[in-house]
Length: 149
Image (cartoon, rainbow, N blue to C red; front, side):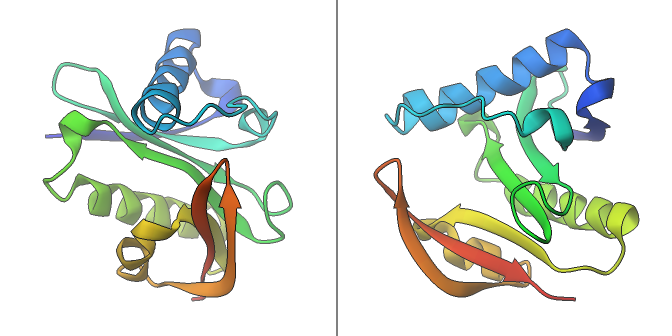
């Protein structure tokens, strides 16, 4: 069973932010063999979803970007689930939690994300549709997607 929590950057404990970064680097840099600039300054302006397993380890995270930070709309980014937490529909649960939080925090508004192209079908299941903007980011095919309430 996973535990879901949302915190603004200003409310994160130092160890929580460390564990969020460690997970993002483990998956995006090490597992996907893709060196990139992880810290981009946006984390300080965002809410962060923290997903912990029964032992308290951070196994999932994403950031929820207020309008104007990553997109004109609300944005979802740095969506990641540890390999140990995959395969049990936890990614879908994480998206549901994020969508509920976004609606409660920002209202019935459009939400954008930039996802890896191979996950387009996953995001489609949560109401996101391609904006037809596809591009390479750090050598990985990505697609911009939008949820419209």
